[in-house]
Image (cartoon, rainbow, N blue to C red):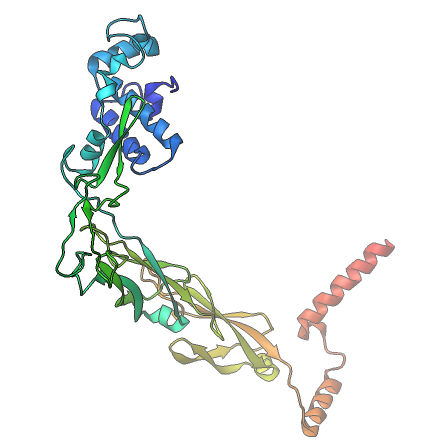
Length: 380
């Protein structure tokens, strides 16, 4: 075992109070306890280091000696605490890790108890439309679960028989294993922590006491939820064992892609095609929103790419409740499949437009100005 500084091992300052030391110790002991890390040698060594550090720093006299002499205070010949290895820790040979376990998780050392296991968390993926995300929606779905066997009523034993106390752990659900000078506690391999043996298991559940089933869950998806966000339903996950609480159910929301709108936070964006006549002369057009159509005025001489805002027609914020806006990106559409009359009128328009002042064609003017600047740069 390493001689790492005890304060560093517990992650506290040298000026830490007794309560701070105890709090740090319990947190680390819970994390590295062998029952939580079966077969993990590294965690086992870490647990021993944490216990060694706490045994010293939780005792005022030992802590004072350690602060003055460091690890040398407990080495053979140092005196004061009996000398020799772990002699200064009050006889570690008789130490039982179950004492720590009972402090952290309740129960008494050696008392008969069954291991309880909290149910696993589950996740269910649900798809909703953009309209449902904007307005909120209630969804019902069915998920797999477990329920008590209706034949043995949860006992796991064949009707007419009953479970007996496990002969290996004597009903405690745990066994103690001695490794070197330490005695550790782990789940009983015979009864898997239940504390019971079933000699004649139920035919339906095969001794499990529960069978697979399904249940219907209802979730309220709030207005403004975004793609990828999750909703937690406490206690709706997999049921626990031996009276332990159930896990949680996480509903992962996926918003389907919309045919018209693209979402950017609380704002919506869409492409708005308008005729070149409306773009040139101005006019009123209809614009779709998630709640229906609205009128939008297009100013005269509007160019492709202009962004028009429709206030308050976006998505409601999940946090603040404020509503975003709808942004329409204008695209001036060139007509296709022209009739002869349309072609005739356009040709006439082109003739009378020849030689127009460049102020009437700002994009064209800007383009040729850039071309002329480039030519001038080449020849100057």
